[in-house]
Amino acid sequence: MPDLVKVGKTTRSPSKRADELSGVSGVATPFIVVYEQFFQDCDSAESFVHALLSQKGFRISEGREFFKAPVSEVVKAIIQAPGGAVPKQHQTQDELLAINADQNDDLEDMELSTDETSEPWQNIFDEAENYYLGLEDYIEDEAEALRLYREAAKLGCLMAYDRIGDIYANGGDSITEDDQKALEYYKAGVRKGNYQCYMSMAKIFHNRGNEANYRKCIRLFVSEVEKGRNSSLEQFRSYTTLCREYVWLCMLWKIDPLEEMIPLLRQNRDKILVYAEACLKSLEKDNEHPDDESYNSRLRLERTTVDWIRALPAI
Image (cartoon, rainbow, N blue to C red; front, top):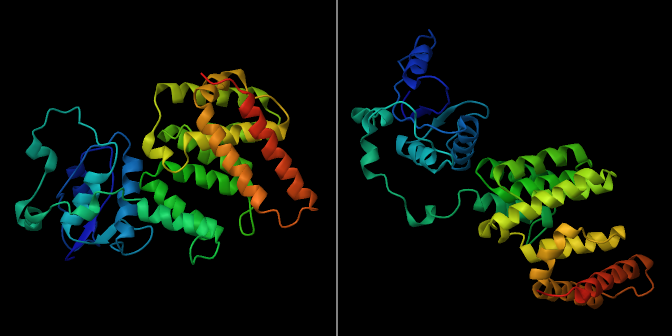
């Protein structure tokens, strides 16, 4: 099967697994292990590699583990997968790579080009944003955005979990509102390292009347932020934006922000205020229907948000 590569996972010996597959009568020639890598989570690693190779057009059929690609391209994808781990067994580097030189001459020329230094999920995530928000010449399509966000998540995009959760939490023309599904994706995001998902979870719990979990989510968010903020994550949804949204929600719910959040809000009070005032001015400029009660209600909410932040003493 020329140029055909099988990419799969096993919790046992790759060579023994290859022998098992080779013993099937429908296989023309034996499988040869040309590269293996240990991972802390082989399921996530496999999803990442499959998604990346599919993105490059190498996948033969959805749901199958076979790719028509040069071995070098497959190895590159595996190297990029997050979570690589050192095996417990005391093996040499040559044994770990398990490379058959006769089968892998193209590896000699394998190098990372300059256009491969960006995140592998970046283009997919950007396209998902265009569909979700209807940017540029894209027509809003939540179903397509959802599909692309899922692919971006497989490739390691932390922000994609929050976006998928939002789509299910808010519903729309083509997606039914589903808080349970939203919560599942927010939890998955948190487990992967997206602490911003705690705030999204807090919103769901408060709306459902579960104050204990609402408070717990806020406390966990504060705890994670104090450990250290993720700059790459916040390039999509800044800390300033997140804090202003929280105050806005509290004003909508007609409650005070939790005491646990106050120190963080005070530390960033000036930046949050600048952003909140910009949101207010933007809404005021859109005053095409001054007699529209819905518009006036949103305007009052924005003004209340700005007034609360102004009254907050800065540190």
